[in-house]
Image 1 (cartoon, rainbow, N blue to C red):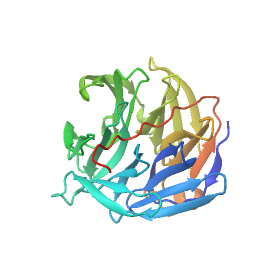
Image 2: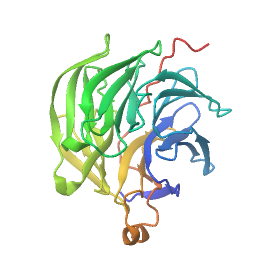
Image 3: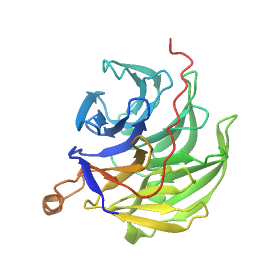
Image 4: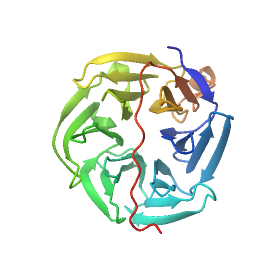
Amino acid sequence: MTPELALDARAELGEGPLWDDRRQRLLFVDILRGHVHEFDPATGGDRVIEIGRPAGAVALADSGAWIVAAQGGFWRVDPDTGQTEQIAAAEADRNDTRMNDGAVDPRGRFWAGTMSLHHRAEQGTLYRLDHDRTVHAMLSPVTTSNGIAWTADGTRMYYVDTRTGRIDLFDFDADTGTIRNRRAFVTVPASAGKPDGLILDRDDGVWLALWQGGAVHRYTADGKLDLTIRFPVTLTTKCAFGGKDLDELYVTSAWIDLEGAERAEQPHAGGVFRVRTGHVGITANRYQDQKHT
């Protein structure tokens, strides 16, 4: 189970990979550069769209558009033209925070959280963008809002605030989009790295990327660690299942915190890696935008 370099993206802070099943492309962001990448594994082509501000996460919309959680709120992007428009504000009055990771829930609402640009604790909030483009603060304060995903039955939500060193679990009400009963699902040993982005597979297995750990962990639904995949880069950020059969695991990475010697030893830091794990993913949920015409 050896990862291969799928794209030498050289992303400063590559994050948020997401498979577009309609276009058969992999989307991901380079956060601080404000870039959204669209990678075509069939041709090796990598298209970059500039958002013009730090972009923490990209989601698919049912309309075919992309929705980007970026500094100051949420933007709609036309994937054909690259044209962007802001559809909702969030912390638009602050210049010391930015959006980080996000995902769409089973009912088509987009969740994304913020964090301090200066790495200060408890400056962030987890937000929910509803179908009518209203924004709701769902959890605050958080420090480094990160991975978020839902079980297949839509009754539980996983969430990472990296500073806690844990994956947490909430009870989730799909009808109202509310969360309650927060508790620890997995505590990650400090020696393994810091919990970053996460996704679920078809069997509700939890895939967690480890910042400064150079690895991805898979946990079973009862919290047992049953798989570790190691990568030739230290700063692994998040994974996504892609390919026609959703059986290829793509993993993004970064070089932003590497010192000179470390970066020289990791020439492909910031790249996108691919590995076959024997597991299969699920089709990404799409944001349901009632206001799009």
